Image (cartoon, rainbow, N blue to C red; front, side, top):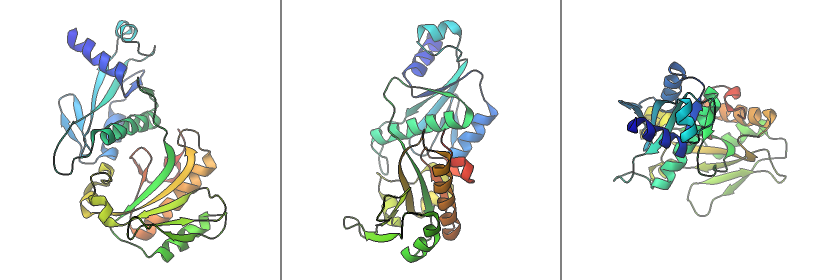
Length: 258
């Protein structure tokens, strides 16, 4: 009983995702989308970004009341991190951000409810294109211009990071582009996400299609336009599109606000 109480308390602290019934097979599928090389250790999944997902934890009505969990929750999963580390390990604060993104992404995909005692992060809609092939900026403009209706995309060099640049329009765009060269992926502050699989080790470059819209409230039209633009760029660069939560995007509908 003490062990169960501990698990219920961890769910209550969060970040956790709760379900009326354990999604089981769908959860396993989502986990492998998040990290194709995820490890399994008894009651947890272990990811390559220092995040762990514990569960499933069965929740009884009594435990839900005692731990102040929402009524109707019968099963849940909670995220934790591997603290500290050496080499390419990142600061724990960044690992906790990934943990919250993972939980929110699982809730969006599997129909769960997010539970966390901490205030939620302010996440904005974005799509990131990772690739082992760097494209000339002019070619990127050629691909993305058709998805921009606020004027011509203008190249602006990032004076603080050699090789990095932005693509902007004079009027406020639905999205703007930030490009980061491959060497940036060596930084422990910007390690590529686990969803990339083998591509993570190839020091990929990255184009971020960023918006000002909250990821949970962005309109369908905005989501589809950003996704279509990112997927078009990924096709041209033989790359992979990753969403705000760290999951891959294969179709425009994968980026819809949830």
